[in-house]
Length: 126
Image (cartoon, rainbow, N blue to C red; front, top):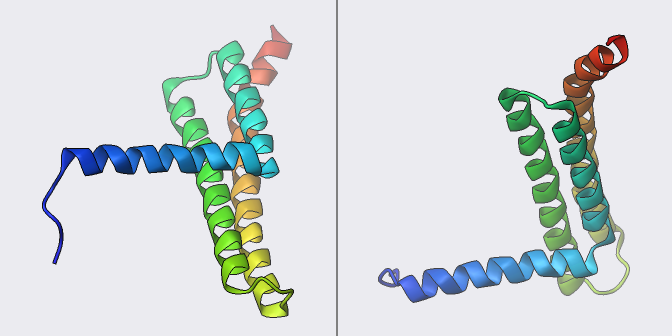
């Protein structure tokens, strides 16, 4: 049976979510690498004055990479909790989760290049 709706509980849930993001920023090197890459993408997007439609794609890619990294971290921490000793099966689980982040980041890079290329060509031609 579910609990009745509570504004106080909803606010608490946001606090927990922000604590999770804080943990990612403090403890996860790759999350910070993605943050720096995202700041670079946003800066280049502003400098090149990309279209609203292109911003949607760029922001979606940034969000997907951050989300993939967050899920990867959660999977790694859960795996370590369940299997603290070195275990090939646990290692495979963690490798697959890391691979998902790599695939997401690679697709974001490809989309970023597709978006930025015409702007950069125009900039060089002018």
